[in-house]
Image (tube, rainbow, N blue to C red):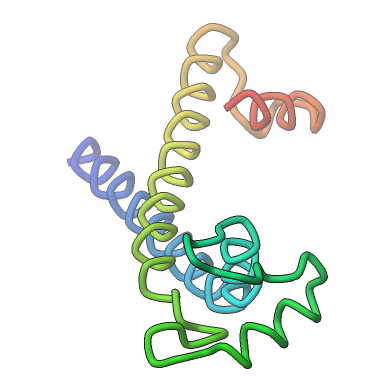
Length: 131
């Protein structure tokens, strides 16, 4: 009855948090991909490369567009590896955070009798921060 509903509600929240974090990370990854690609290229100089990419962002972007090839498509050439790295990481991070925060509030409610809405704003912020 009620316990089954609570369990279904908790599962739905986990799925919602995972989906929300995945969609947010997808948008962020696509938007920031040119910056990430430039950063990686600036940090890594391959053997035999005569001139590394400039540390100046505009110059680096210009150089990378000029040097772009079939295997190195600037600005979205590394989108697939970024998505496969970032999305699972972000999903686990957000779901884990919310589970820890939820458990912290449950434990506080057991020990103090206070529901999450009974805590002052500063206390809620501290609980969220330490979660």
